[in-house]
Amino acid sequence: MWLAFSLLLLAARGGAGELRPTLSAGFADIVGDHGSLSAALRVQIARAFFVQGEFLVLPGDRHTDKGPTVLVGLSAPNKERFRPFMGLGGGPVQGYGGDDGMLYLAVGATQPVGRSRRTFLQGEFRVGLLGESGFRQFTIGIGVSK
Image (cartoon, rainbow, N blue to C red; front, top):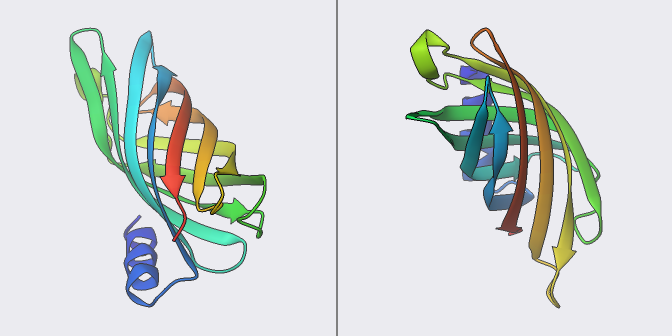
């Protein structure tokens, strides 16, 4: 995880080809229904490789799971049209009753909107573990490509 954070920081400081801040909302299923809110910064390090740092909040019934995650993956290289992606992620998300630590597989896609094609909509599905509990999440987000 520290390697992924280091890559994210180095790429952001070194003038990476593309920065993609994104805000997302959706729902999650972790032994019951949860909401899902996240703020992320994806750094496209090469044409098809990216590292994404994120802060994730999963509000549930009488508790909230939250914490940072890192997603490392591959995406289609062209940012000006439909762009699928997939990756592996995880982080020290604090869960309910000691169910801490998250590991997941993410698949999704972005679609540019507007005249400048810099703004994009993103849909993403994740499946994995939060501690020892199964985890599924679906989000819709909006972001800007810089």
